[in-house]
Length: 103
Length: 84
Image 1 (tube, chains in turn purple, blue):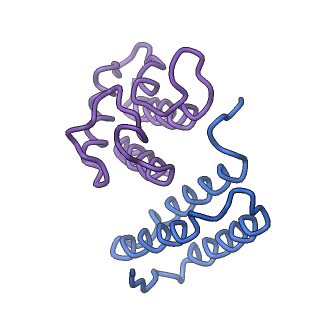
Image 2 (cartoon, chains in turn blue, red):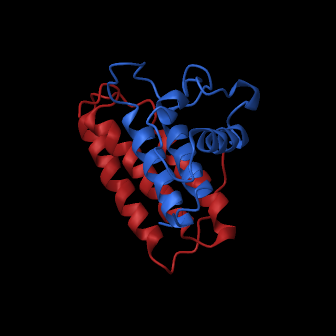
Image 3 (cartoon, chains in turn cyan, blue):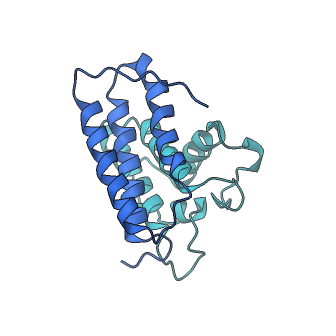
């Protein structure tokens, strides 16, 4: 699998998921969380769940508006990390850039 | 797909913010910090408008889209922005 396909896999997973988490998810809280992002499942290929988890956590911890010590895979963007909806848009953009996805 | 958290208008606002951030990414590097700050402050300024004030929100959305189109034009290299 080429790097670009791996990257677009991250991108579509992260993008779809961070947008979709504001919708109803029968099994989990409707609030955006990392668990929602990660639980989509990444299938086979070079990307494994831990690798993507680590990258998402890394970008999030370095996000200037976030207290890195509060970042865990189950953290709620709003309740635990104090982000508002504009911040979440910014964070998604940072994750896209991390994936080196070019618009 | 039902969306319990945001109204249609809120989603348009967030979509506009995202579109603004994307177009700022295409701008020269040195211009980006002030452009990001400007975009964020414009949205912040209107944060507390009542969600029921639909006319005003739609007016602001139109205004924001026009402003974004202006800034996207290649001649526009940035804004002079002083916060506070």
